[in-house]
Length: 399
Image (cartoon, rainbow, N blue to C red; front, side, top):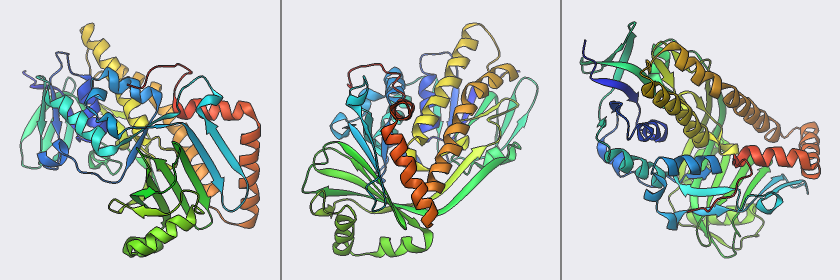
């Protein structure tokens, strides 16, 4: 029986496209299925989101040949990160000079990375991207799977990879349960200019009733992320620019001088998801379909990139030895290498969110104690910094 595609990837977001890039230069025939139109993935527009790339993620993007396609003029190094708790003096500070790494990471516009990923895929002869198409179901057979499309057509493949968001429909169709955490919060994000330099320092302020973050962009500009309860989000979105500028300037206590909105305000509801398992018969989950993170640790994209890299490496090894790329043993090894870290990050992040957004008097005291302990106990800072940057203490030039 002829199987036209070795792998069908459902979803042309960052995880799906990065996995497709990992297959460039192999004999693996790949079909990427995306429900949106070609324009939206080939020329994505600014969506207000900045990706905090770890050192590991940067190495992977370079290996994929994607990093050179990103506009480096829009990439900002992250030299320091400060975490504040309300109006207390409690502070947790991470500096690149505290370790052997030159910077903590790099901030790049989400749309720029997505555009570069598509440009790389477009160069490949072994990858076909099918847009405005939806997968309705997947049916497993011993040596292949049938992929059923909404228009009634069917494609056979050796392996199906779902990368269709944290609300993955196909994940549910193949019978993989997931834990979903609705934080009942909305993240409002926009680009803002400011009078004073950010000095490439990221800020995370766990204020009472809201969380405010600043991600340093190129020049005297930053991505400002305001997280509030869902019932308060519309008022923030409807606020005039004058009032919004005044609010954010005051919320940052004037430390950056007058702040002025220079980008569109975008909003994103916060829902975390973790699949119970990352695999089924001839089926694997990557990206947000496997684990959708709360953005407070800025690790969602990085986990997705790491997961696809693990799976792609195993598949290329199997191809080189003439083995079945959809075998149960290969998929189990992928899950074993990836799922434990994602659980640690998912539940750990949710714990941080629960602690630092609880404004009860007792919890405020706990929050301050935690920050003071972490700040003044070097081994804890070292472990957190090394884990967040994924640098493994190796220096390398940024570009």
